[in-house]
Length: 532
Image (tube, rainbow, N blue to C red; front, side, top):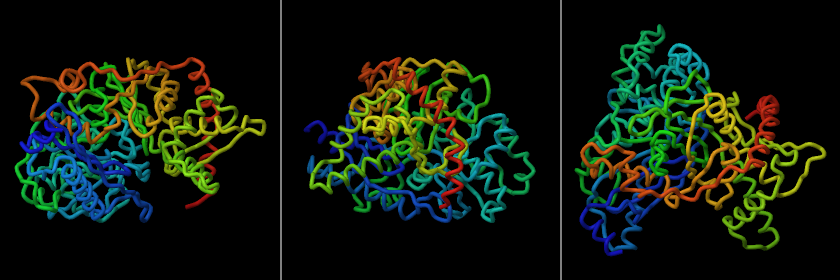
C-alpha cells in the first residue's frame, strides 16, 4: 500500500485506458506493472439508421466518467489526488471509420467494427490488392462511402479509428500504433508502415482519383511500440480530467487496438504464440513464422504492436447471446423467490455443461446478434434448433451455446491450422468467456485442438495491456524488444494454468461444426424471414 501510494505521489504510476464494446476501463499500474487502481464506465453501441455507432457525446462522457471513477478509487485507497503520471496509453476497439474535415469536424457518425455494410468495397479491394480486406477495416468503410457516392468523402482531411481519435484529441498528434494501423490499411511488416505498393494501387482506382486528397495524407502516421507519440496537452488534460488536477506534459504511447493490447496482456507477441479474446466479439491471433500460402477471406493479416505479422480470425458475435440465456435463468430463479447472483448461475450452468454430450446430443445454436462475415451473413438472428430425438437436457443446452460462441471462430481457425498448417505452441485465453474457471478454457482447447492457458493477469485485459505498452515506452532499455520486455520484466516466466485438448472433446466439437456448417443456409433464410 505504501509503495503504491509513493508511486502515485511521485508521478511514476502509469495509466492505460481502453474503449471496449461494453465498457471503458482505466487501469493504473505501479513500477512493477502491478495494477494499483482502476475505474470504468459501462456503455452500449446504438443502431441508428442501420449503423452501429457511439456518439461523440457518449465517447467523451464515458471517458471522463471512467477517469473520475479512477480518481475516486485512488482517493479512497491512498487519500491522494492524481496530479501527474509517468505515461498514459489509449486503446480501443479496432477498425471502424471516423472521417474528419480540415477544421476537425466529424463528417459522419462513428461507424464501428460491428457494421457489416461494406461487402462490395471489401470484395473489390481484396481483388485489387491481392490481400484480404475485411468489412470492418477502415479502408473498406472509406471505399464503400466512395461507392455509395456519399457527399462527405470530398471533404475528408483525415480519418482514423476511435483510439486514434482520442489520442489526437489528447496530444494533437495524428499518429497510430502499427497494430491498430494494420486494421486500417495493410502493413508491410518489413518496414512497419503501410504497404506502399497497395497504397499506389488504391490511389490509382478510378473512383478514388476523382478526389483531391491523397490516401497517404489522410491516414495516421504509423509508429511502433516504444516510440514517442506526443505528450498530453493542456486541452487534453482538461478533457480527460474535468476536475482540473491532472497536469499537461505527460508522455503518451502510440494508440493501439484491443487486439494488440490483448496480445500484450497475455504475453503473446512472440512467434508461435497466440491468444483468443472472447467477450462481445471473439478473435484469435497467431504470430506467424512465415507468410500464408494464399488469401483467405476468413483470415485477416494484422501485426503485433511491434510490427511482426499476425494471422487473425475475427468474429462479431461471442457471449452476448449466451448472456441473454443466462439472464432467463436468473429471471426464473427470482420468480421462485431465490436470491442467486449471476456469477453463481454462470458457474453452476457452465460447469454443468461439461457433463453434456461431446457433440451436444443433437442440439444446435447460432449466437448471431449481428452479421458474421466468416459464414457470409450481413445480418444476424440468434437461432436454436434440435433434432426430434435430441438429448434435450440442461447440460447439452448450455454446452450448445458455449459451442455456438466459438463456432465461427473455429471455422476460421480450422483453415489456419488444418489448411495452412500454421503452428502454435500455446494459445492464451482472456475475456469474459474465461471467468468461470476451466470451462471456457476447455471448450476453446477443443475448438482449437491446442493447449489453452489462462494467466492470473488476463482478467486485467486490454487496459492493463495498454498500460504495459506505455510503461515499455518510458522504461525499456536501449535495443530491448517488446517480447523480451514482457517475458523478462512483466511476466517473469509465468505460463498460467494450461488445459490440454481432450481428444473426445475435439471430436465432438468437429462433429458439431459439421452440422453447424450445413445449417448456415437456414440462418440466412431466417435473416430474410425475420426482418428488423
